Length: 338
Image (cartoon, rainbow, N blue to C red; front, side, top):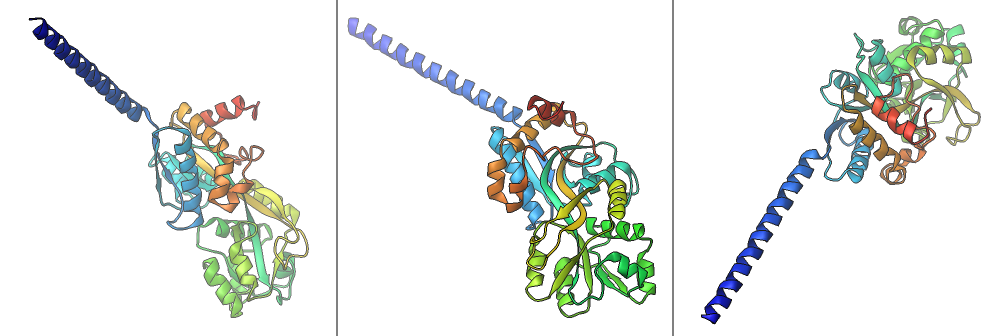
């Protein structure tokens, strides 16, 4: 009888332990499901697959994942000009673009047929993409003024129609009082070519100049300078100020020595690449994403060389698109914004 009682007690204890373990397992499973459901889940639209902008976008996405447990951040391909309308219509919540294209979309200026007023800015991603007007060194002119005054039939590549580089080029020429049609009338040509194709034709002396907004130094320009002697033109400061006002760009300087062939400083325009968001994305989510970028400068520097220029001092220089309240909240808490 005593032995039977002991066996029953042991059996009861085992059943009790198993029941408690199952209850704990169910509780843990429910907690994990709850955590998963609360985890940040979003999408960022970036650049063409395999390009530098796709690397930039994935770097931002990974920063968010590192700072938010269980976060699912999907990166989708896009384009500099295409991304603002996608975000502005809430087709995707986040995107990367230039500050100038974000501002153009926000205000409804070229190349956008209407204003996308629901776009907001979060942070700078890559601080500077500088407009660079590169010509063969044997070109018989050293400024845009000389081209205009002498009606030189320049064969000019302006990147794809509607691209940032093409829009900047068109606006600069407009401030000098000329159009593409004027250049063609002088016997020149306007070509919508990629940088790779442009520099191939420059080497063959079939293109004279290229205008585009790219990083400093640009790997494309460096490579081109190994086969073609190049020089870079500066701009009238009044022209730069007018274009800056029109396009929401900044005036800056390309320092002498940035390329082996560059002997003097070049006054020009630049536009940062920024992360934009739809205004209806919750403030707390945007706050966490801003914080993730801020906390991962060192990591981002290992993702791409251009991220090394991103700092607490310049991450707020997003141009003229309004900051999202969630980003404002972070910058205020960090003491970066009054």
